Length: 98
Image 1 (tube, rainbow, N blue to C red):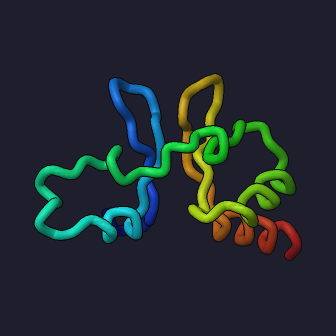
Image 2: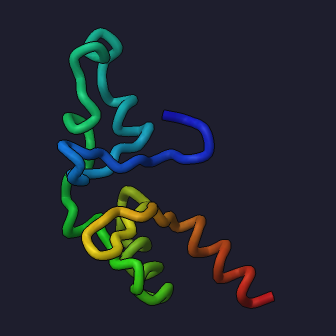
C-alpha cells in the first residue's frame, strides 16, 4: 500500500469482499506479514462500504461523514468502478462552488 491511494478494494475470485487501508495493514505484527492476507485485515461490512455510482453527492458526503474508513466503494451494476473519499467529495464541492 502507498502512493496516491490509502485504501484499496479486496477481491476473492473476482468478487469484492471489503476494503483495506494502510492503517489496517499496520495493525498486523511484522512477524505475521508473510501469513496475513489482505482479506484478513479488511473491513468487510459491504452494506456500509458500498455506494451506487448514481448516488447524489449530498448523500455520499452524508455517508462518508459517519464512516470510520473515510471511503466508499463505488458500484455500477454490481461492479466496483472506483473508490470515493471525503477528500474527493470536498474537492469536488469546492470546485463546483468557484
